[in-house]
Length: 274
Image 1 (cartoon, rainbow, N blue to C red):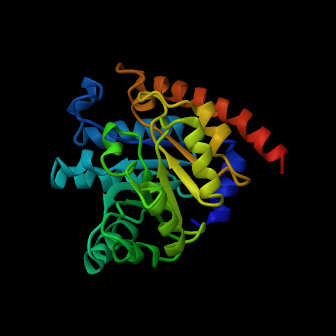
Image 2 (cartoon, rainbow, N blue to C red; image 1 turned 90 degrees about the horizontal axis):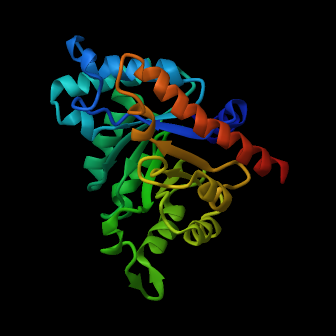
């Protein structure tokens, strides 16, 4: 999916919601455990209930890899089931020397046919560039996360700049707004979100942390939206585990619908200013 297709999808659906399928076998409704593939059965029900409300699904590969081959099979069934035209993200946080990164990129872009993959840039440009070489595929590079440990490295100053600022600036020289996004955590300070948007005016941000982690959709939208929206706001647990009974998918839909309706308001304001 190219950038214009993504922007058009956001405008058409009046949504920039990304739903995270961080599916934990120990958290899904118990009645699904009798299915041949409980993880896929859960994901299928969530997708069926929410596909008209979101523009993207993000699959956190850790929740699948931990189950070995069965988990990978569930992942493949899930990504193949997601309707064509929605933006698919492999949240894998890969990053290694160039030839290894090339194989990681082939895994997620060719074998599983995701639109995007998250990448950790600690090893530098040669660990990121292989992902950026794929046509109409997206690399989503860690920028500024909002976990407790972000102060260990990301918020350390180097030559008058925070390390995360150096990472963002370097990334913009490796990729373009057409193939590179940045992960920016939702629970960062609103002023910091605004600062990052000024630093990175054109690239899309994948913003995790809304919902269970307490990130504010209003603050994110007010401080980090650009002329093309420029945001994929991810919610995982607050949507997929909104209910735990037979009607869990309807509860997930209600939670997703609440976010999407709020997004309509922010999109109307943003596009009205163009």
